[in-house]
Each structure stands twice: as structure tokens, then as C-alpha cells.
Length: 335
Image 1: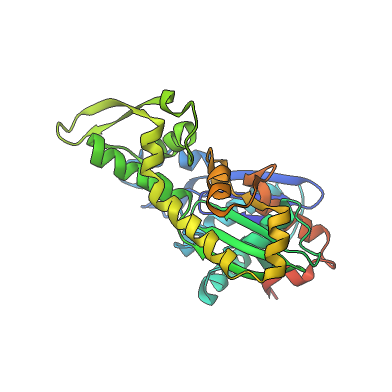
Image 2: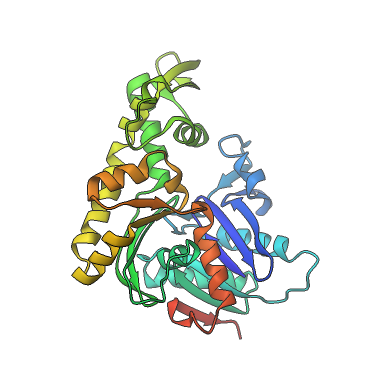
């Protein structure tokens, strides 16, 4: 079983079946009984809409486990859901994690998976998994550059011969882009909006690079007006949302430039030939590939299925276990 344990979404791949689960990484808990009421999509609908005794939480922050017990609860539920009808007892699990996590954070992920019933747990760095999932020839002695923009972290890595040559992990990604929209709406329009509304704005009219149609793109946003304290609807345009996201996007661009500056010349030549690959949910932001191409001068491609790259990579590693054994960054056994 391969798992992409993401800040925003968790995806599960089962050998021979493909991707069998894709759910938001959210758990709704009854605080009195300390039991999960809903996990995944059902729990996400409750974000910001729960009564006093129920909380909807995201157990992962910046790509790592922030709430251990809730993360374990969520993993158990997802594994149980995947195993329904099949006696897949104590699976071998490969989990994609950000490359910049500490030893303690790695152990927390292993521990959570072991507690959730895994027989063996293998960890793989997300950029490596994303590159394998995007179909890059990571086993060959050529330079491949991947940028994996998730919910909590952006991973930039140069890979060759099944290994990471240079990598950088910044804890600025999709969540920070949504956060910057929330701040902008509050500052400019005096409107308080929630996480889900910011996400919708980003998906519908957000962009990273100006286009001709930009100024015509509009959206009505509902929220609480700060001055009157009453619900209010305002109309916003595409260019102002792009402007609001410029700061976190510049941090991502800087990380890409720093990685390219540290890349050995032979591999840098390969990257110029092959281009840069974009993966992760953040790759779906309109115009991001154009912005990176413009800033670096290197052609940037978006993976065929950017959201699933990491989990597809974990699946391919499981199916070619012997050939790709060198890609793991950690392992543990449940004796």
C-alpha cells in the first residue's frame, strides 16, 4: 500500500488496484466522547461549521504530523476503508514525506502508520516519489528537476541515479497562498472569509502570471463585513488575487533559483535540455509554469496528473521493489 500523507489530501494506492482513495486530510472529532465522527470529505464539509462539542481538525501542518493521535485515527480509518472486503492483513506501507523533515517528524509518521496496523513502513522523500509518479527517468544518470507544491510544503529537488543530488523544502505552499487571500480580503475589502472560501477563490480566479483574459475574470465573494459585523457580498477581480499571492509565490521562485545555483554543471545542462517538472496540487494554479519559465529561463512542464504524482510514485516503488529499493529514506518493522 502506498500513501501520500498530505497536508491537504491523503491518497492511497493499493498494488494491482491503483489509487483507491483520495480524501481531504481532515478529521471531525466529538470532544466529549473523543471519537472520530467523520473523516475525509465529510469532515471537510464541517470545517468552520461545527457546534461547540465537535471540532474539525487537520492533523497535518506544513507536511508533517501536528496532532499525532488524530493523524493515527485518520490513517486507521483510511486503511480500514481501503481493506473493506479484502483480508489485506498488516500491509507493507510506503509513505511519501517532505524531504526537509526532522528525524523526530520521520519517527512520528512511522509510529502513526505502525499503530494504524502496518507490518512494515518505508519512507520515501516526496520529490523522489513525485518524479517517479510523473514518469521521469530517475534511475538513469541524467539530471531531473522536480518542483512538488503541496498544501503545506514546496519541495524542489534535482535527482539522478535514484537519489537526490540537491533538494530544498520550504514550508510555503497551497495553504499559504489561501492564507494570503484571506489577509488581502480583510485588509482591502474589510471582509472576513474562511479557509474554504479562500480555496475556492484561488481555484476559480487565482493565477500566477498575467494573461489577456485576466481583467475580465470576476467572482462574487460572501463573508462577514468587519465594520458592520454583518454578512456582505463583494466582487473581486483576477489581477487583485494574483497580487495578493505574489509574496508566497516569490518565496517558491527563490527556492527554485537557489536549487539551480547549487546544481552541478553537468546536471544543470540536462535540466536545460529536459526542462523542469511541476507536480502537486499547487501545479494546477493557472500560469505557474509560465512564471517559473519566465524567472528561470528553463521550460517548465506540468505533470499529466499533478495531484496523484506522489501516490503513483509510491505505487510504482511497491511494484518494482527490488529495482527501486535505494530510493527509501527510512524504514521500520512492526515485530
